[in-house]
Image 1 (tube, rainbow, N blue to C red):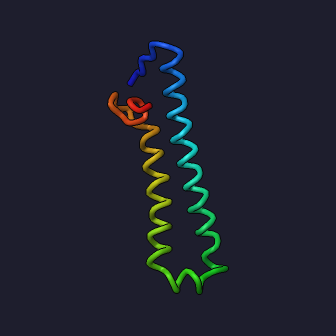
Image 2 (tube, helix red, strand yellow; image 1 turned 90 degrees about the horizontal axis):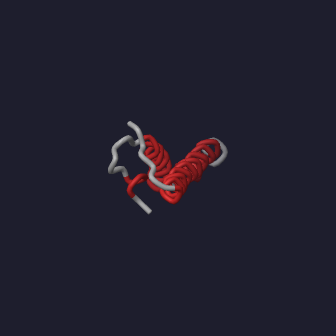
Image 3 (cartoon, rainbow, N blue to C red; image 1 turned 180 degrees about the vertical axis):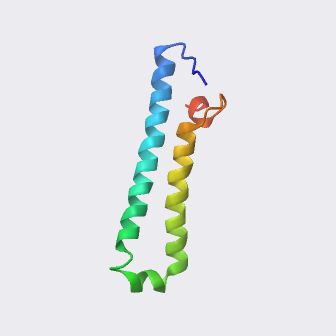
Length: 84
């Protein structure tokens, strides 16, 4: 789908929104990877509070995927295109 950009201001707004989504996805993916890497070293701590950590892992993973989906959303009413 073609994106019709009518002004430099609109392009800047779209680029800012795209960057915000990409940075947020990257941050949450890094947090997920770092937590995953720490699981073996801190296995006891993770197991003692697994409910909290399982929700934390899932939240970082979901946020990563959600933000990537927003980047690739082709609908004209997508949040990335309509926001800001």
